[in-house]
Image (tube, rainbow over all chains, first blue to last red; front, side):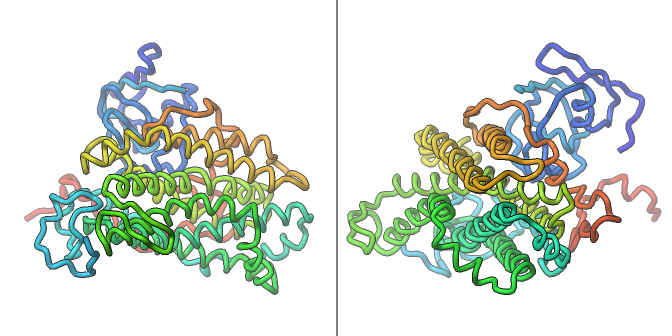
Length: 90
Length: 376
C-alpha cells in the first residue's frame, strides 16, 4: 500500500521512538530499524510474528486467520494507522 | 452420551461449547459461534493444490547424484513426514468429530484432515519419482525405531482420547472393562485428555515438521530436489494454517471464552503442556542427530538444526501462553523465512516452474469506496 506523508510514531518498549509514514507496513518499519521479528507467512495466517501492541490502530492487508490475543498485532500484514506503542520482548 | 450421526435434540449451536455439548445436527454456517473456523475453512479451500501439478522429474537426476548420507537425510525425512501425515489424515476425524458441538468447527476438522491426505498423496508422488520400487521406502517406515518412537508420542494422546471417548459414548461415566483395560471414565478426565491431545497436535504442527522442512529447503537452496521443495513449501503453508487452528482452540479454551471447566483444566495442565513442548523439542533434536549421523549437508548441520528447533519452540510456546523454554533469541536459519512466506511462493520464476497461482481464491471483502464509481 502506498504510504502517505502523515507521520506517526512507533514507540517500542517505552524507550525507542520510530517516526515513519502512516500506512507503512509495520514489519518493514521494525526491520528497517533493526528489530528482528520472526515471521513466516506474511499473510496473517501463521501468527509467527505476533507482537504485543499496548496502544494504537492498524489495518490488515490480509484478513487475519491467525490467533490475535488481546493487545496483540501481526506486524507482517499490519498497516500503521496511528501512533503505536509496542512491547518487543526479544 | 451416545454419539449419533443425526442428533434429534433441538439445540442452539450458538450456545454450545466447542466440545462435549450436544452433537452437531444440521451443518449450517449462516450463524457461527466462532467465525474463525469458517474463515480457516475458506483459507484452506483457497490453498487447494494437487501434488501432480508439481513437476518433480528433475529431482530424479538430483537424487541419483546425491551421496549416501544425503540420501539418508532426504529419505528419512520423507518417511517421517509420511507417517506423521498418515496419522494426521485420520486422527482429527476419529478423535474429535464425535466430541464436537459446533458446525463450523466440525467442518473445519474435516477440511483440515482432508488437506493432510493431500500431503500423504504428495509423498507417494515424490517417492514414485525417485525410485522404481516405492515399497522399499514405505515398508521400512513401521519398522524404523527412530521414526516410530516420535510418531508414537503423538498418536498416544490421540489413542488415549479415542479409547476414553468411545467408552464414554457407549457406557457413560463410571468404571468400565474394555479391551485396553479397566477405564475409569469421568468428564473431567475426558476433558483433560482432550486438552492434552489438542496440545500434542499443536506440538506436532508447531515444531515436529520443521526439521524436515529445513532439510528440504536446504537442498533446494543448492538447487537440488527443487520439485520436492515446492511441494514441501505448499505443505508448510497448510501446516501453518493447521497450527493456527489448534492455537485458536487452545487459546479459546484457556482464556475462558468457551467451556469454563475446560479453562480450569487448561490451567491445571499448563506445566504438563510446557513439558510436552520440551520433550517434543528434545525428540526433534535427537532426530537431527539421527539425520546427520553419517555426515552433514552443505548449509546445514546438527548444531544449527538443534538451535533452530529450540528457537522455533520458544516462538510457538508463547503463542499458547507458555513461557519460553530455551531462551534462544536469534533465528539460526534466517533463509527459512523465504521458503515459509506465502506471497513469495515463487521468487525466481525463470529457474523453476511457477506454482504461485491461486486455485479458487476469492476476495470477498467489499468496502464502500469500492462502489465509488457507480452511479444510479
